[in-house]
Amino acid sequence: MLDEDGYFGKEIAAGYDDSAADMFRPEAVGPVVDVLAGLAGDGRALELGIGTGRIALPLARRGVPVHGIDLSRAMVDRLRAKEGGADIGVTIGDFATTRVEGEFSVAYLVFNTIMNLTSQDAQVECFRNVARHLGPGGCFVVEVMVPELRKLPPGQNAVPFHIGETKWAFDTYDLATQAMSSHYVTVVDGRAEHWSIPFRYAWPAELDLMARLAGLRLRDRWEDWARTPFTGDSPRHVSVWEKPAG
Ligand SMILES: C[S@@+](CC[C@H](N)C(=O)[O-])C[C@H]1O[C@@H](n2cnc3c(N)ncnc32)[C@H](O)[C@@H]1O
Image 1: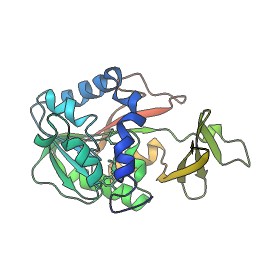
Image 2: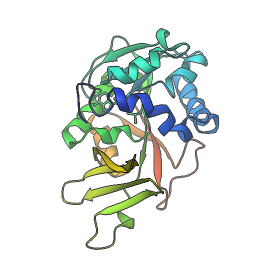
Image 3: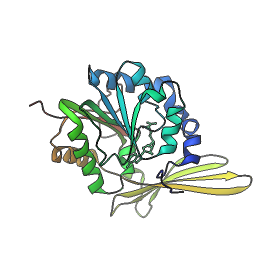
């Protein structure tokens, strides 16, 4: 249900770390932190959609000063309750428009979270907002899936991504508008519960154009955080755009 915390209210926040347990494994987090710490250098890092601190906490433990932006107080409360969480500055607000004091050497938006902005205008605004926060030579890093349109036969608009005994999950696509939703159906005590969250999908090239509109230029694009080369078969990309120095 949508509340003042957006789609990440108390109930979702309470179960977030368990439901994303795979993404919290050291093997998943380590390479992300390696890339971001390298880009941060001696500077500060800004996480858009900091959530419960999956990346921010280990990055801060590496010695990188991290500041976060998030819409959801419920998610940030979970971050605060963790060791080191109270030391991380967080601004509550929409990361497409919220301004934070100071300059950053890296800003990052991981785990498909750019898709939480459901209009092209908001996504463009987000790139502009990031560019305002970066110092010369600073980088914006986005990790996001490649839209799975190749899995859609003509006439079908749904792509299942989890089929279980008591839980099913699938994405629906509207090819005319680039709107997309993820749906989760779970059976609890014999009753089915449905939760869905809206997204907007975008191709890497559209994101490059948004970066150009914000004065950023593509520096790297990989399939993953291990810097595997991005190809036409890559299911996701990690893209790094740079604010030109001077
Ligand atoms: C999928 S979680 C990712 C959290 C964290 N980055 C991670 O990797 O685990 C998305 C987070 O982004 C936040 N969020 C989504 N849209 C937002 C927006 N427009 N402005 C600020 N925060 C937003 C949600 O509240 C949530 O905490």
